[in-house]
Image (cartoon, rainbow, N blue to C red; front, side, top):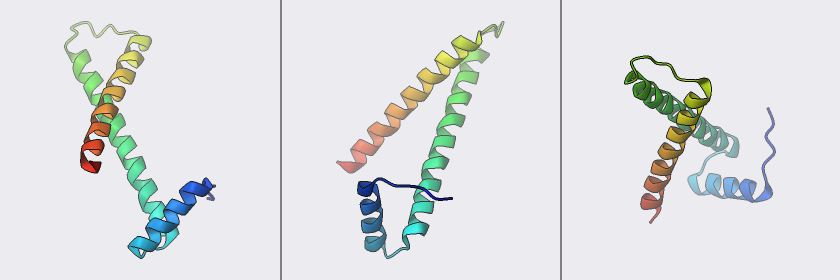
Length: 91
């Protein structure tokens, strides 16, 4: 697989690899794996949250549109929380 990076992103990757004494490809793979794992974790957490909220409905009569809306809302809330944590760490 070949991934085309924006020049700025490639420069940042090279700088980080040099700083850490790592191979660019190995570093890119590790960073991408981390992002994908985080995205998967977010997805699982959002699904769990939606499932928990639907468990309170005795009929479980929820349309697909309502489910998707609730899922998207939960994902956004969790993303904002995570971004808030990253901002605090960077500060």
